[in-house]
Length: 367
Ligand SMILES: Cc1ncc(COP(=O)(O)O)c(C=O)c1O
Image 1: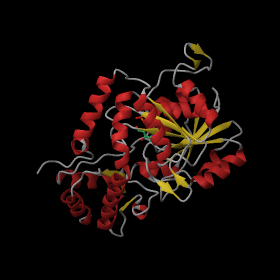
Image 2: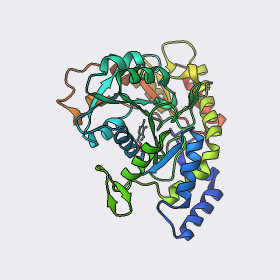
Image 3: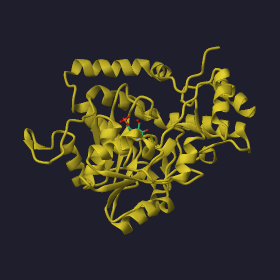
Image 4: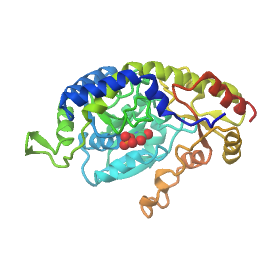
């Protein structure tokens, strides 16, 4: 019996191989490789799927975050508040845009930003807040929106881990001023390479984003906006994403089912699935199956001995990253810091077999 991986992208490809090969073939022979018909169709289909009026395809999720921040009017020196437990992506995007990242702690039960954890991090210099739907669980955007509106700051959703999640107020991507998606291959909706998108209800903002992703052009060869760059979703990736998009809801349901079974296997005790309580909710899409454990190293060793691979998302909070050394010195984020030592990611992907899920559950039951 081989090791059980955290994810197996080869199985995802195999499941759709004929369709993927055929659409890639069509693109190859079309003679159109960037910003063509596949891209335009994907933008329309994805905007509709996430309940936003406009979608702008870009090169990756980090570019999507950076463009989203510029698109809501952030200028160099402005502060952006975000969480420190979401893998440094928003912080990287903010730094690239010349912004100053500030960090808010998270709720201990969901590890998500809430209005209560955000409020103390807002300052008069805050221009935007980025809320990450971590591990695929929608944050309470309604409460954050009210707080941001009162403070006069923009709210950006980071939906990289939450494609297809939907709450009472609508899908991830439709809940704030603007939203960023990643289509990195491991995402719930993953391309066969890098890809990303920014979505918004606002037509004027979408026009700004379209300009920023392509040299700041207002027309071909006329650079009008500052901070333009080249970040476009190419035809091959757009075509691949169009094949995959209709399957997203089914894959998400399967992921939720996996997390529900892990939660059941762990039972009531000191260990739990971070979003086990939400495993039946459409507001959660099981992007990462993360458990919380008081004894991570030991648990990891037991799982490894059973041939089950694990990982940690993420071991070093942003405010402790070397690149920020000297800038966040005294900052304490007690919940974020404690969680970083207790989280452990288990295998979870739509093509996992029932036998494989049982294999993980057997180990979890023994904890
Ligand atoms: C929460 C989150 N935000 C942003 C990103 C950045 O996406 P990309 O890798 O496409 O730049 C990722 C994934 O990598 C992510 O998990």
